[in-house]
Image (cartoon, rainbow, N blue to C red):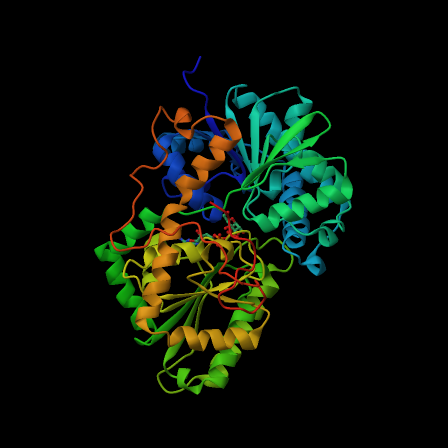
Amino acid sequence: MRKHARFVVVSNRLPVVIERNSDGLRAIPGSGGLISAMTPVLRARGGMWIGWPGHSDGVPEPEVLQTLEAGSADWGFDLVPVFLPEDVATGYYDGFSNATIWPLFHDLQGRTVFEIAYHKAYLDANRMFADRVESCTEERDFVWVHDYHLMDVARFLRERGTKRTCAFFLHIPFPPPDIFMKLPWRREILEALFHYDLLGFQTFRDRRNFLDCVDDISPCSHPSGRGNVIRIRRENRQVGLGVFPIGIDAREFENISRSASAHLAEQSVRETAGNRKIILGVDRLDYTKGIPHRLKAFEKALGTHPELCGNVTFLQIAVPSREGVEGYLPLRREIEQIAGHINGRFTSSGWVPVVLMVRGVNREELVAHYRAADVAMVTPLKDGMNLVCKEYCAARTDGAGVLVLSEFAGAAAQLYRGAMLVNPHDIDGTADAIAEAVSMPRKEQRRRMRLLRNTIRQKDVYWWMDTFIQVASGRKASEFFDGESLRPYPQFLYKGEATDVTPSPPAGSSGRPGSRTAAPVRAEPS
Ligand code: GDG
């Protein structure tokens, strides 16, 4: 019998990718928002991660298992695979998760595919995840299921009679009723979510949307309480509904940013841009991230603010993603075409306005790009949170740099006081914001960056996990980790930096779209 209850993470993908090299198979780190957030904690404190190892490309399951066992020893936590038959995996992942829920929950109804076979595959896959969770965990373990791929896991666990504490965090937005109601399986999904003990959302906007949907579909549910965590009673179950904006490992980004190698790599990024001012975009190549809109705003800015021509380089890193899902390859072509068009129109001797990198870079190079960027453009059409904007600020150990942030990113609820907020659909407004950001005086940059960095440091990934686990399990998070605190270093603040971490909207703020300072969605109360 184990001494402690275990901390178990369940997500669509394991945080590793199985790769074959000349020495055989090995588990290398995967990428993406969830992995960036959770891996540091599990590596430091141990636990278990259950997930799909991805399409196996003919690698036999025993070999995958063996590789993951070796990976578990290296990584310091257990990697447990859920093997999905190829047809189930395709319908569940490419289909229901990424062609139905992903676009719909980002308000993009026109891109949403409603296909009953996808939904069936989704249920099959969620049942297989529930089987694995049941067989690998005990009743006293704490099971934390992540994201829109796995909304039905608790339902299947409960059908088997298990009573494990099972909590769920939605990393993406929850849509308002007029969009959610289009889903043929809307009632089933809400019912499934009620089998969790706690549902976590990124922002108040998402929780409010969820409650509005519940109210439309089953008005007999009764919410109670106020603030970050409320309760809702439905039939004989009580479910917590919490708002937990996800953070990053800010200290880690600061440490990389201060390293000599990051300084060196920063120089080479600056040289790529001919030592001009740099505007940076870093995104998965996804239609929700607003890359075409951003490039068009840059083009507009060059046309209306001629002083930018020859003096600014737009550097866009776009990491290929979900290439099996419809719509992703055309997006790549669209972005390449817009970048080519801008370069064709504005390039002059020795200056190319847009540098497009359609590939990922390693962590150190990423930080070097953050350090080199005078302006970061994080302008998704809608985003659950967005970690890139937080990483950019954490990497700015010099206290300079300007964050231009979409008011439709969940992060805007936390960062609206230091960022320049834009509506990414407003190309002219965004173009003006670009010009303003590029010429912002150093003193104003520092004032804003101080606010941003302090919020990001205090509401970091450890704060996020600690708060979520405590609310979900009723136990201090340290109880799952041999009594140790989750944060592998003390909470840190620097002298001379403000400690304002729980911003509230400025007095008289209307939150009106287009405003560069108003809060677009409610900021979290203390
Ligand atoms: C989902 C939600 C939510 C990107 N390019 C490179 C690279 N990245 C890393 C970034 C960042 C992560 O990928 C992307 O995270 P985001 O939060 O921006 O976006 P999603 O992947 O859509 O994540 C999102 C998140 O979950 C967490 O809850 O914030 O709203 O959609 O960490 O650094 N990393 C490296 N090279 C790259 O080229 N090394």
